[in-house]
Image (cartoon, rainbow, N blue to C red; front, top):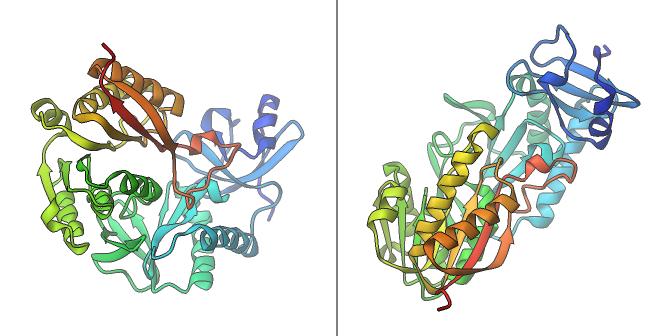
Length: 381
């Protein structure tokens, strides 16, 4: 059955022709589409086929140039994604992103590996209805996992095989971490920061480390593995800190690690100790463009507070996962934070997502993670 056709304004021809995976709701003409309906879109001489979603700003997620994708099409996309992971996943690592949504030409859906289990998450009711069954079938055939589950607001929904245990232990570069697939952030762990954690490990020899917004202590564990003398993890979540303590113990670092439950803004105002390496990795501070200005102010306050805690010659490793904050804006925030803190800084390293989170050049919105390492120096008199 052929999908219905909607004709868009001709001005959208370049975007549609470029392969951009989103069509916004205000760009659609009147229609009678329902969640999960396939639709053919035409703008000028360009056309594409996507899945309609009744909620949110993104109304259609584009999958193909012509024709509704079948099981073989989805199996091919899954196969391409798995081939990339076979080449780019490091040794002694069994937790990573298998399918990166738009980056792997499967918009609105991600899938992560945690040992023998796969966790899938969808960002659209339409994608869940029209795309998820075919992707799960392809993953099951290709990977033969012990189980595949869908992460929802209510927990995990079994899709294939058996459900995972409440918590399981996975590895990154040989380091061991607890993954809470039922209640943890994202699908269990922040897999996109893996290579940035490795960068912190390389900076940490002999250092006293402060890890702000530590979550389960990933940066702390990597720093300790790199020879840090001590690491302090600060987070407002009691559960996250308990996992951080357990992760330090699992890797033999319990005696060199301390968890502190505190609001990070309040901690920076009250705490005066200085460190050789400070990690600042706050959660997203803006959900839309309207919250951007407030987010930039908050990042600037946090950056200035963190820089004041760095000894001269030390390092600040700062990250932002707020999609609305561009890499250029993030550098400007760090520059203003340095001015307020009264220090000189040098950018010595910039990065983003790990390689298992590929980006498409025609989709700049896909780059949400920024990671910058600053060398911190005293002001020149």
